[in-house]
Length: 378
Image 1 (cartoon, rainbow, N blue to C red):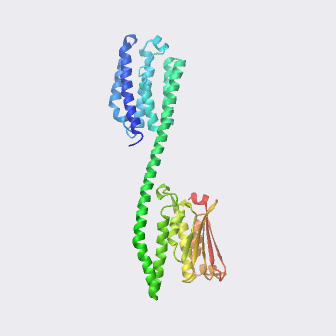
Image 2: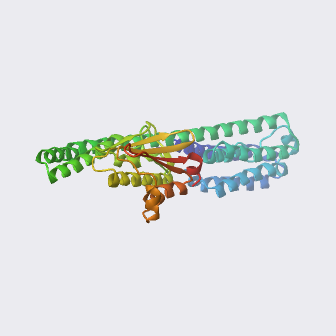
Image 3: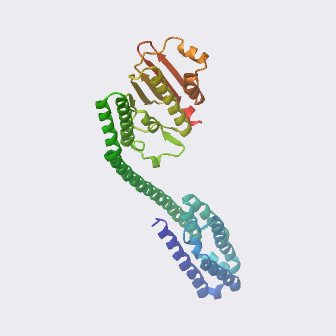
């Protein structure tokens, strides 16, 4: 049940009771009014309005801005009509206005619907109307105005806190359900797919030949799948709590981990705008493709993800034979644009940079850097 539901029910009861109270006050003192017909006509409209608008104060969706405006206007009209209907002496002595305390219900509707700011807005109009009705600020008037002001703003603030707490609880329950489902899937994968891949890897190595290559591929997939199962949503923060416009870079790089590719990343999410995260991950994939194509079948690669204060940095390093001096420029001249477009071009579009450092016989290192400000602006 929504935490707001009891407040709307209480407001409904308050409006009915205060409507009856306002009508009862007039019935008891109607002989003292200088224009009782005017007062009776207004209270008849007030009673009819209160009854026909009960569905409007049943929940926040039904209580529209247009209704709130009309409701407040009716209360203000009653306050300003009081000097025309009631005796001046009664007004001077602090007598009630025509709507009496029913007016507070109109202000409370603003508070429950929109929070303390809406409550302050509505109670300000009531304050001005009460001062105009009395002709000058009096102690009683200021006391009543301050009471309505403080009470409505306090209730509006409580409503805002209740809504925030309800939203937090809903997110927590959703996260808990998602975590349970992920754990269930992890158990199923471990009991089925991972065991099959491990068996294929062992049998392939034992058989040798082409089966050994099949076993190696199965081993790579086993490592990658274990990494995904272990990582799940961004560590410490399930996917449901990450804004849809952002992605955790680690989750995009996790599938690259394998028997010959080691992934090292921070313990906290590395959040980038979705487009930037995908482009950076694609640049890493291009660098790994170059390792597989040019560093030899036994070459190993390491991916290091760093969450620096000014930039997200991904380094791809291998232990292959390295790149001969001038080879990248030569390849670009021959029309092979792997490094120029797939890596440097992507980082240039992100406002970042790609540095390639290679020493013949000692492997190659590609550093991809995306400044936070540049990534966030895309």
